[in-house]
Length: 237
Image (tube, rainbow, N blue to C red; front, side):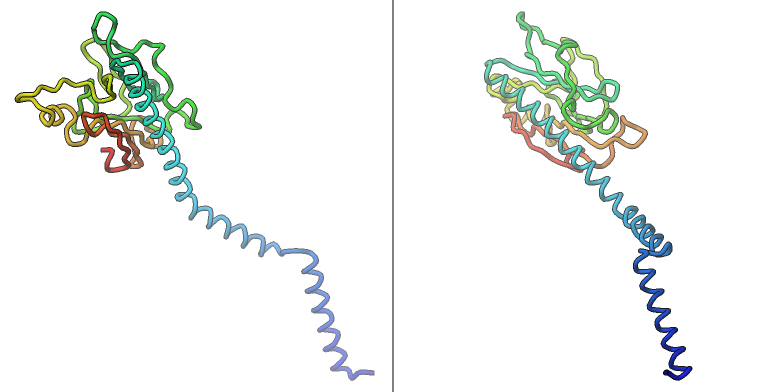
């Protein structure tokens, strides 16, 4: 027989052990579950901006790859067919479009893209209208300005081909270069400038699909020889 105090202590210890054992078998308490939910919520809030930024970068990278592929295709067609080929860009109802076509008609006049020539630039990508915006500093055929304008839907005519890059039969920019006073450097400075011909894609501002955020990618035709470079963010302005 045990003493009264010793027996009470043994009973208390056994009761505590049985309680802990029962709680362990029952799983987590409500307070513990709430704590886990709060921790997960805080981590989600912290991680969300980084995840969104990552997704946006992936989108503009894919779109820029599409722009590069279009320009390379126009160059290939020009060299293969031994004819000048143009590639034009526009935005129609928040949908980015391009057209590749022969630069001249059979009678020697400037060609313009037909309605059937236009294709969805991002058609094969999982990008919805309004998520991205396309811009360029090209004001006329192979002619640049100092600023990039976005979401433009220009009118094309035989005398005006805005937002258009034209490659000659060698894949270079189709520009007349004189050998006297108006040499290569003078033409480069007057037509494409120091920045070159820029075709840029950017994440659109939420609720304003015609305006660009600072997340940008671009393809730049830097020289008269038609060399293509890619850039991002500040280089695309």
